[in-house]
Structure formats: structure tokens, C-alpha cells
Amino acid sequence: MSPNPRDLLGLPMLAPRALRAGADLLERLPEIEAAVIATVDRAQGTLDELLDRVRPIETELQELQVSARTLERQLGETEHQFAVTDRKIDELQGLVAQLIEVTIRVEGAAEHFLDKMPGLSAERAEERADEISRETGRPDPPS
Image (cartoon, rainbow, N blue to C red; front, side, top):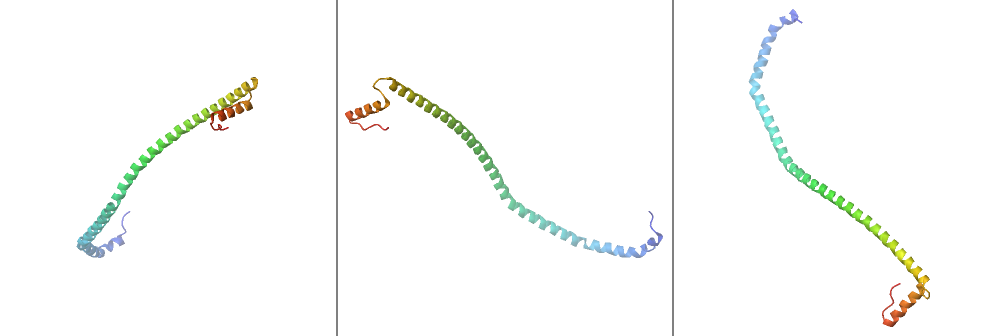
């Protein structure tokens, strides 16, 4: 699209104003450059200060990561030990159940034996144990 001829007529009047604005800008460039450099320096100083504050935090985070890994390893070992302990408890419960079963069988067999023998009974066996205790001067065995 081509410019309107009327717009072009005003161009010679605008040229001096544009040249003055350009000249003003060129004159202010050192001032603008100094302001930009000062702003960049302040930003760099702020960044350096932030980095100085962040570095110790970063070090602490790394130490925490090491501690966390150590705790995770220890937790795994503890969980393994709990599993081993649980298995041992299960084994002990099974053994105690077997022991109780054997004790019941032995007690039943002993009662059966005492019932079959003339003159022997559980009561008579207790009486005889009491007699032996009195004769030997030993205290009665716990019942």
C-alpha cells in the first residue's frame, strides 16, 4: 500500500523535529548506558547475594539427601529384621503348640497308665510324693 500524497506533504515539516529528537537521544545515550550499567550492576550484586545465601542451603540439602538415603537403608534393614523376627515368632508359636500337644498326650498316657495299674491312681501318686517329701525333709513340690 502506498502512502497518501497528503501525508508526504507534512514530511518536510516533521524531519527537523525527528532529527532533533534523534540528536537528543544520541546526547542522552551515555546517560542511558550508565543507568543500564548501574541497573545491571545492582542486579548482579543482588544475584551474588542470593547465591551466597543459597549455597549453604544447597549444602544442607545435600547433607539431608545423604541422611535420607542412610535412613532409607536403615529402614529397609529394620523391616527385614522385623520380617525375620516375625518368622521366628511364628516358628516359636508352632513349637509351643507342639509342646502343649505332647504334654497333653503324655499327661493322658500317664493318667491312663495310672488308671490301669492296681493300687495306682493320680491321687495315690500325689500322696506317695507327699510321703517321700516328708521322709526326706524336702518341701512339697509345687502342684
